[in-house]
Length: 542
Image (cartoon, rainbow, N blue to C red):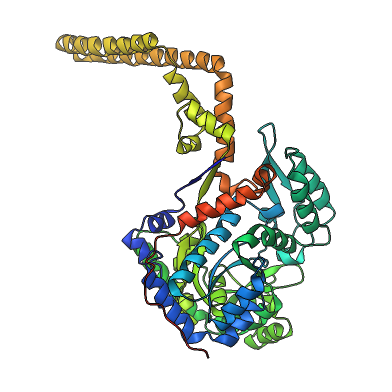
């Protein structure tokens, strides 16, 4: 097994940011490759976060590995910071990139701890309030016969839109686990990992709970702590921020639109649409979540059309803080308000919309954390590496459509005498029709039409001959092309990078803890280079 660090890619804005375009970098708070960015953010955090706030933040965390308690104590007493990342819960741990986020956060935290000479802990924010059941309920795995399978739980109830932390997995979870494991090879490691999944993913537990259990095991050795976004203490502390957002929602919309115009002016599109009169707050009802809209001096819920005054919303929140939640733009602000966050590790999708959050951070008196890209990796097993070497293919070649790759490979196998014969014929047709065109045009200009038609027809026939030669060679080389198709399935299943599709247990069952250790090493390499000798801010206990 080989693991390759890969460039991230995404929307034009995310790609420009990753390529350090000045126009894109200007839309983010700070440059993630500059130590001054982290020093300045540390000073901003110290100015508003004291020991008590750190104590409250730490009380919501779980996981963190074997020495978690010692590190939490050091974090509190040493006025520590956090590097955060996050993802919604996923079936059986979700796709690979969730692990990559957590491991990148751990690597960056270790680097910053040495630079700042202050405790820095990595925290994975589990978006348990997410409502996208259809995305969370499935996962993908390749079986021993090299076929891709989706394993999933049933769709949600029509018209019901509950957060993931309120939805038990149900009786179907055991059948899904049996099916999932049936696609795995019978290795010496399978019983351990199957037992872990069976203990975590049970009918009476939610995907959010099970996801936390799995990440606690997988990311614990890297020292990653976990937090559920619906934690009752977090919700209580977030309530004043959400209510303030509603009170000032008109100003927020104006600021968001002005900022959006700046983003568009820099040549990029907005990733999160700005809807007139929409606030950045949702209210959770019995069966669905509804966005809050301004309606004159009061508010209106989009789905039910129910009208509420600010006093009504405050009463709902005070009675049950969990009923209010932020939208995608306000969520990072909530996190930074509750945690001493230095940096957020983002994937390309998040990097595309985070510049839109700037007015919300400013409105709540917080500076945006330094946004650092997550690691992107390609895991190449030995059998796949042999195929790449045999056909002199690069990983990027595998992203192309199979017909394109197969056609190119087969054309390379056309015998040289056949290739030269086709080239000579094309040259003869081209040269002689040019001569004939020149001759007939002196007789009658209308005669050029038939000559040009003859040339087009001749070239079309030659192309058809070449196509049939390629088809014949494809049949002759079907075994080789099947090997290429297998490699493409493993590296770009469904045309997507493997990290966005494949489940990590495909590799854990085969390579056990060595797989995670290798990922950690590559995540370390992905942290942007930082100077290791700055003068660190020491902070003052408050």
